[in-house]
Amino acid sequence: MKKGSIRLLLKGDQRADRVVPPSGFTAHLTLFVSGAMAFLAVFALALSLASGRLADRWASELARAATLRINAPADQRASQTAVALKVLQQTPGVASARALTSEEQAALLSPWFGPDLPIDALPVPQLIEIVAGVPGYDSTGLRLRLGAEVPGAVLDDHTRWREPLVDAANSLRRLALVSILLIGGATAAMITLAANAALAANAQVIEVLRLVGARDRFIAGAFVRRFTFRALVGAAVGTILGMAGVLLLPDASEAGGFLTGLGFQGIGWVLPLLIPPLGATVAFAATLAAARRKLKELS
Image (cartoon, rainbow, N blue to C red):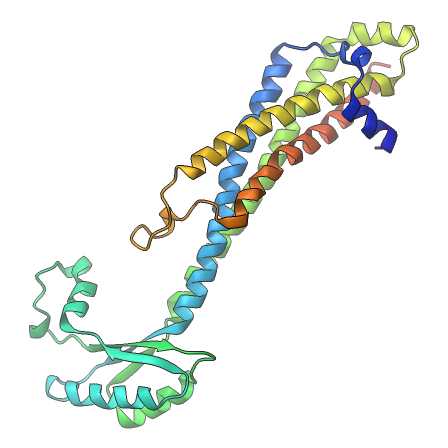
């Protein structure tokens, strides 16, 4: 659209605005659709950002963590554990390594076997927690050395289940972004229907305006301004309600996991404020296209 048309859209024209009825089902439909879609867009955006943070956290934390499992007879387990700890202390890139206590291993198994598991009476391997430093250690070389010095040691760097988790978080983020696009498309479709209904309902008024010399640009501008303003107001209300809903969600915590980290953080609170102007832009484009098409049909 030309600069003059944009200025006219922002400034308004009282004569042209009388062409569009100030109330009616099209007004309520536009306000409701814009508000509802903006409300959903806020939560989709929050889900997208939370999924991104989750993927980054899992990628960084799990990449640094590893577990060494000592599968040895009970009489050799302590000695092999001591040798393994010595090897890990001498390995460049290993920040820390410690053997888990019996209580810690029992706590890991309690979700499956209950809290009264007699771990000392079971052939449970000894676990050693490894935290990698920067830039990390050579897992291939470490496996070879452990294989030579600690026959019962099995190094698990969590690669097998780390990558699927990160991929799942990234897929959830992409799904949220697709949802935002679908919300925008649904908003455009509903506003187009409302604009078409308003134009059809005012067909006689449009015919009279043409008879007295009104141009289609003048008539279309009236509909574009009114529907764009309705969409802006509706999206603003929906965004405020959506941000209030996100604000009431529980804060992120280790115990709650992903379900407690769906809110915005820091500069992220600014992003929902872009939804109302984007909604108004969608309404502007949809109404302009609908008005031009409908006016041609009424010619």
